[in-house]
Length: 116
Length: 112
Image (tube, rainbow over all chains, first blue to last red; front, side):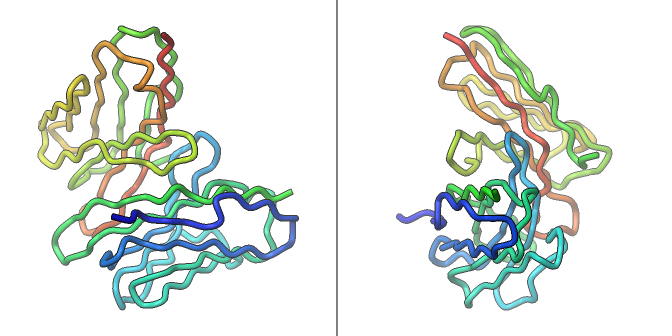
């Protein structure tokens, strides 16, 4: 079956421009997560969507970052007025979600963002 | 300072050697996971440990969860070049729902 897909796989943009990154989760997964991974480092949580609940935005580093999700499908992460420190791989993951239980997160291949 | 500290950050060894990677915290986790990530790909789950003192084996990999559920280790026996990659630990805090907190990763290179 199809896994988590992300597009584009690579994005090079000039400082100050806006970028939009897309994530298609596994069908039926109600939970969706965005992470940022700087070169050779661990994952930094950005935002979490679960069903129709308000998203947990506690990891967003600044108000230049925002994300939306359409129902239980596609999500887009938008970075406005990009800065060089935004250069990283942006990973999306999805999982089943059920109160009181933990389900495995499945990761996409990521979008490598380079801000020049 | 990260909530989960991994050590070492980098490890370069010869094929056939043994190694241990550590993941430590001052916080208690309801469960802890280990992932392996290869270049250009997302992390792939290796194991989940949920009980203090639990030991799980996956072929040449042995995972242990500390008794107090604050730390974990990954031991690889007779490492092979195919084990090369970035190893990440990730913990789920109590009352954190499905949220994971990741360590900084250990980059392993196994030379033939």
